Length: 73
Image 1 (cartoon, rainbow, N blue to C red):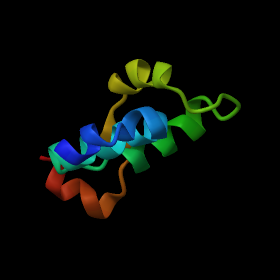
Image 2 (image 1 turned 30 degrees about the vertical axis):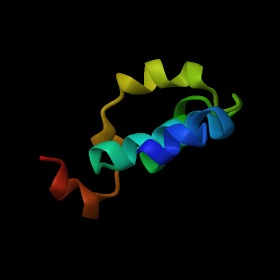
Image 3 (image 1 turned 120 degrees about the vertical axis):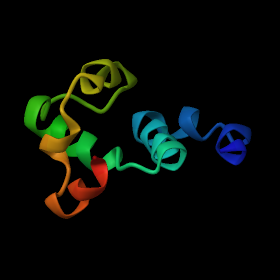
């Protein structure tokens, strides 16, 4: 996590970079559910940090592969 911060990873990679850091911090999928959610709700909009707020209210289970969901409980 320190290396992500040291290299300004999020600033360089944007919203997907932020989600990668969150995956490492939490040990939970974030990028794949975000991309599925984004394709469903905002397919014509570019990825942006502005989408993190509405994504935070999404039910991740709806966008997470079934094989992975067992570990979400």
